[in-house]
Length: 469
Ligand SMILES: Cc1cc2nc3c(=O)[nH]c(=O)nc-3n(C[C@H](O)[C@H](O)[C@H](O)COP(=O)(O)OP(=O)(O)OC[C@H]3O[C@@H](n4cnc5c(N)ncnc54)[C@H](O)[C@@H]3O)c2cc1C
Ligand SMILES: NC(=O)Cc1c[nH]c2ccccc12
Image (cartoon, rainbow, N blue to C red):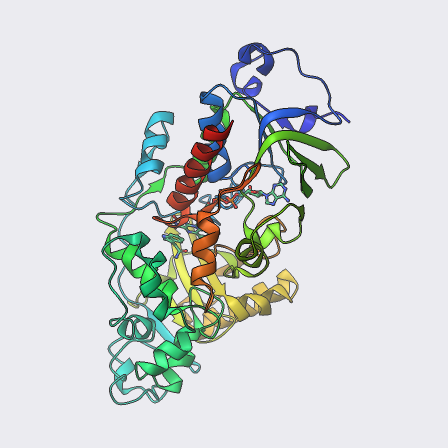
């Protein structure tokens, strides 16, 4: 079959010069089976970075990407007003790799204007400010908790978690003592049933019963060591992966979904869903484990790694994008953001005043709820909820679209978290060094998380492959 339509390469960016000429290699065939030194599965941050490091070392690399575009979980919605990001956006001040690559490729970043502090709370069907919350009828927290705003409850109960000196300390055996269900940890710290309910309502995870307290010890260490303002990429975060892809000499084959990986000892064969087959001496697979679950892997993998591929949890998140005919959040004197225990409201973030846009962010079971509805019905229901929570929104909102990460077969969630009792298995998965088949991606980072974690892991795996080529 012809790869022409699906192929992007440096050719597209240098106007007419073929990739093979630039690479000094023989003209490319239309393969049914080919060999490369390394095949990278996934054209997200981890895969593009690994590919770049290996081609710079002189190896022949092919990148196979299941989607019709590069970027993976960096995904800018170019069709919506203001081009909001549906994926990663906040670039930490300490993201050394991200900033270095962006500098090199001329990808501009900026510090976004500060968003207003606090939130309008909409609890049990009633809206209130942080000031009103302690005495509100709907506040049935325990006496010691009553003064704590709903979105601060979790943090108020994490103060006794171990404070890591280094971010990678989450991997130390002694810290696995907090590798227990977050709900259990919070109960042990004295959280009331109502506090647990509110914490669960907008958890950055799927459920306090399934997420590990160790995950939060790790996250807090990352927050503490943030050191400076976060930045955004000008024009949307996907400009970063577009620039990384454009700078590669290697071919990136889009619409190339991997279905099976077979380790043959002296090389690895890959079968795509459309019947194409590829072979290479080494494979670096950067598909998130949530998506890797649907790929058949015939290889000798250690049990901990197998277990993580099967069970590492990914946070579910669904978004609704809404346009506003006027920035109503400026007219009522209330905090911009809404934080609600209503599963159809979750959190409302203002994306910008001009164009005036808001985003509803629903996690876990709330994401499941809207995913099961048709988009227009969900959109209309969400607008009614916002109008109830905030009368100044009445008649001003227009539903644009939903976006569900777990419906995307190449993502199946937004990012991993440590599941209760999974700490040591994840540690061993991050340390795994394959002979021919290698893994990378944000889920296998040790020192960083998110985008920087993806680059860290891509770099570490590329270095390992280079040692073995
Ligand atoms: C909503 C959201 C908000 C986020 N916010 C932030 C943030 O503010 N800051 C931050 O640092 N991080 C954030 N992140 C996380 C960050 O975006 C990711 O950690 C990072 O982009 C992951 O990169 P990756 O290369 O590991 O994986 P991916 O980007 O997922 O790349 C993997 C690639 O593999 C491809 N693939 C999957 N299966 C197959 C298959 N079978 N065949 C072929 N290809 C396949 C996918 O299509 C994808 O392109 C956020 C993520 C999301 C979704
Ligand atoms: N909580 C988020 O989705 C944003 C975010 C900021 N930094 C991150 C690092 C990793 C994953 C997500 C994030």
